[in-house]
Every structure is written in C-alpha cells, then in structure tokens.
Image 1 (cartoon, rainbow, N blue to C red):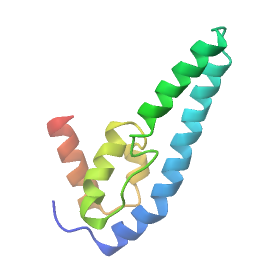
Image 2: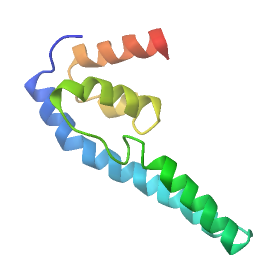
Image 3: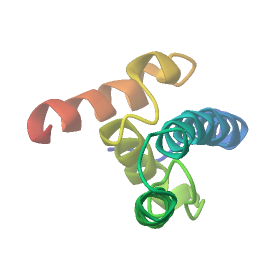
Image 4: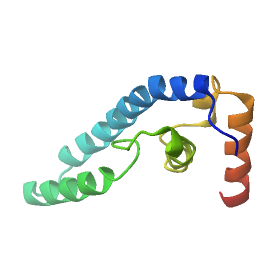
Amino acid sequence: MNDISKSDWQLFNKLLPKWQERYMNRLNQEYKKILESDSLPSNKFWKLEKRIKADRKSPGVIVEVSKSSMFQTLLELMSENVITDEDLSGFSKELRDDINTVIKRFG
C-alpha cells in the first residue's frame, strides 16, 4: 500500500460524512422496526439500547479521521457494509486495487 494521494484524502473527507449519514439512516430504519414490533415496551427498549450500544462502535457511526488510518478505515467500512465497491469509484485506481487486494486476501 502506497502513500495516500492528496486527491484520495480530499475525496475521503468529502464522502465519509455522507456515507455515515446514509448508514445511520439505515440504522434508524432498523431501530424503527424494533420500536414498532409487538414486543413489550420494556423488551423493545432494552433491545434497542443493546443495538445502539453495539452500533456506536461502527466506523459508519463514529471514526477517528486521519490520513494514516484512511486505508484501514475504508477496509472497515467495506467489511461492515457501510460502503460498497461502487462508493470507491471516484478514488484512484491504485487505492481501489489495494483495497480489493486486501479484501480478496483476507475477506
């Protein structure tokens, strides 16, 4: 993996908040289903609380942003289905190839 290019870094910073919003919207829809279920109110509350606690650890919700961790963050976003290969279409071919190499090797 080579150094992150300036253009890839700028694109990452532009897209990450959009990806996170999209992911959190998906989570909200899942939370809504929990709340609309036929379970007891207390069961819904505790199930939702457990889910939110787990989801807060996802890079789709919160992540430290640094150039040195960008590659790892992209891998985590891919592995947790926050983003897809399509979301990487604007990035350099080199970065996309590096990501796909790691995913194929370890995914």
